[in-house]
Length: 609
Image (cartoon, rainbow, N blue to C red; front, side, top):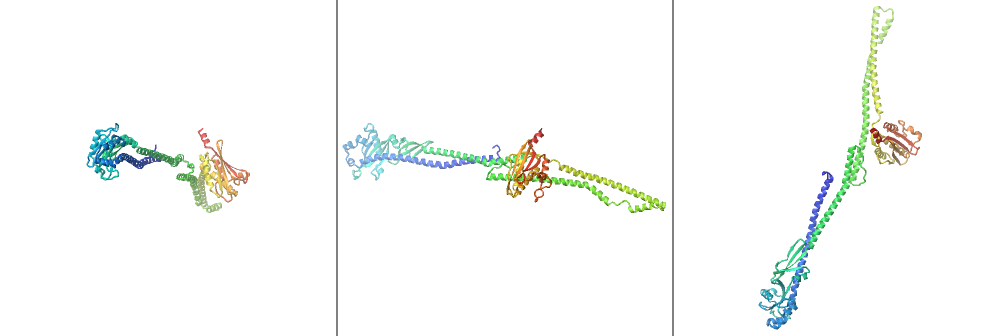
């Protein structure tokens, strides 16, 4: 997060956004699934409570109806409605009879609405209550029982009497066998209390006489719910309500389950996102950071070292392999470019030397060309005739004087020509000295010690081992140390020396006629120098043959020509301040090439001192 533009920061933001969106979506999904289901369960629970309440009220009224039906289908009641008498009233309408029937009020009413008899007893004292009887009688006169019962023989309803509620059972008065035209109606009343209703419902319930809704009334709070069930009278309208409060266990359970599911799902989502982030960091970001760090090291140091091997078969492993292949290719190209630059430098140096030599030889060529093309200053035959003529005695004086003048002039011309030639030869000698100086300077530069720098000999050995392993038809196993060893040398020259020694070792192994061999390289620190031993199990050589191996142009392979040769390798090692020697226990017993070079750390300490 310290770098908002980094891949890790973007990944954190993306995962955070995914987590938030996922949590919101998961919460909405769970709410859409859980809340309606628990609401439906709560609705069913409410319906069950309502049905139980209705069943309890209906059962309470049915019991009163069952008791009154016995009085309705009774011949004594039928005869009483025709001829009322005190004896029937005393036996069947007394407070004791009402107590035995467990009713609080009774009445006989004619078909015309006339009340034959009505009573209401005090349940505590078991005596008649005139006030309640009057209220009961007034309520009965306002009820149309013909319309209430219709074709039925009996029925029940609830009646409010002041602050009390009673279940009313009503039956038509007929003979015991059910025959005869009904002569009126018999009614029984049984008071219902909140305690009785609570006992039946097995939960705290109250009879609310002030609230009489025509439909079920449900008042929901956060943790409880109040249910009011209407209690209907003879006309179907509510006269009171049975109210009770029940806990909203299902709703609370649904809410708790919702929050638990949301919390658990969110926690699981966070854990999954955290694990996903950790896995992405481990599998992607860290390898990419390792590649980036290695690239920074390569850019800073300039050394094209390979990325440490990590066995992976996924895209990151393929990226690492491709990166290493690219680095190896760049490294090979750099070394090849350095070798080519070295060769090109030598070639350009040689061209420059030849150009200088040519420029220095031009005066000599010109002098020689002019000397060859220049005619003699005087004809020799003419001079010889003049000399012969002067040798005779009969030459007249004037003629002799002319001949002497001619000869003198010829000798002077010859002397001038000789002096000119001497001067031109002097110039040519100076030009030749210049040429010799140019050639000598080039030879001196060629024999100068090459520029040395710290280099890892283990890396050079590994590179040349890889090349030599696939350079021939023989399978060669290489063994060399893994730890770095920095020596003071010319990396290009040392790489060519080691490559030539590996090539010679491979040829020696192939000469044994076997299809495989082994080359082992060991590095030892001896004081301030590194001793590098290259051992092979090839054909070897005799001990007395060692000096011959370093002769210029010598080779034990008659089918090969060219190459650097051990002579060049030895000279190169000497030029770098090291050495090269060959050892063998004899033919068929392999050979050892020993290189010695100064350690870079020791050279640095000496320079610092």
